[in-house]
Length: 96
Image (tube, rainbow, N blue to C red; front, side):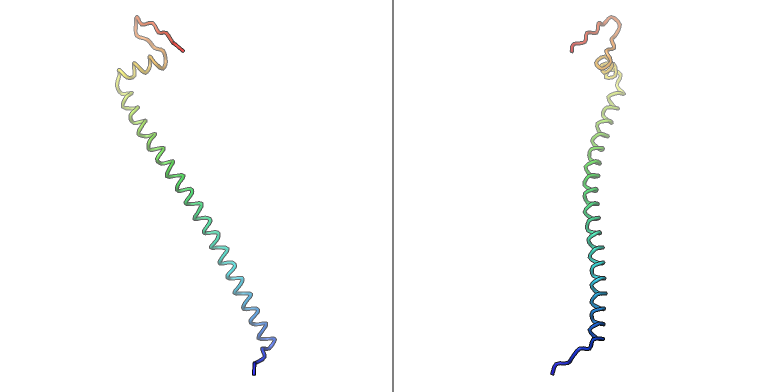
């Protein structure tokens, strides 16, 4: 003989089900938010790694440039080429 479930028991089970469903939904929402935050942080990390590589390359280039600028012959040649300075007795002709 099957037992009949009373209305009070049904109501109690339904309430427990709703509470469990609400908790599970909130949990899944929080897990989803965390997942998207992790994905954003990974994208940001990849971007920052590329930026770091670019800046390290730029730093190496600038260090070489500083070493070159410490050489007086290089500075003289650079000034003549870049700013059209000339030595005494030289004539500067700019060709476009």
